[in-house]
Image 1 (spheres, one colour):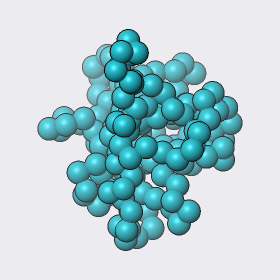
Image 2 (cartoon, helix red, strand yellow):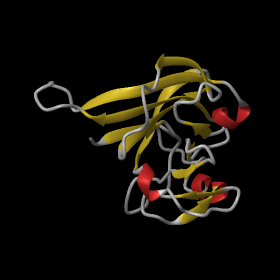
Image 3 (cartoon, one colour):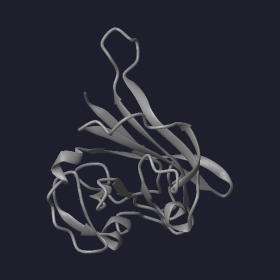
Image 4 (cartoon, one colour):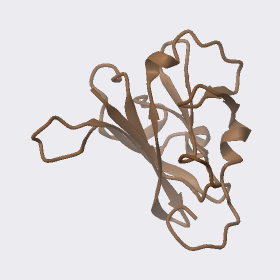
Length: 165
């Protein structure tokens, strides 16, 4: 089953693909997401989405949805999927484990209003057995990056209007 995880974000630099998120598994096997974020923005919420069953009339189904970060770390773009310590409100709790391929969607808070962010694809089985130093993450392509690398994609002073800017 395919899944989608989306995150809301700020204006990001031009790359051959959408700006990447960073992912890692903690010692308990929980998925940690590092989301690219401008300093003037905060994470407001996140969702995990999988491909919807054929004939449902939908493209994706949400399997986890949470809002209102519970910590400064989550507000600043690093959170654990399905963990109640990352968000205060779970609108759709995660039932069972995460699928092996899904989108993470993030919603941002900008000047007191929610704003669309970005999404990225993750396959948790590709993270298993990967040895990362503290503060390192893997991109969906398998590159090792730091939190600074992830945030460096954001064009935080881009004067163009539009979502995420």
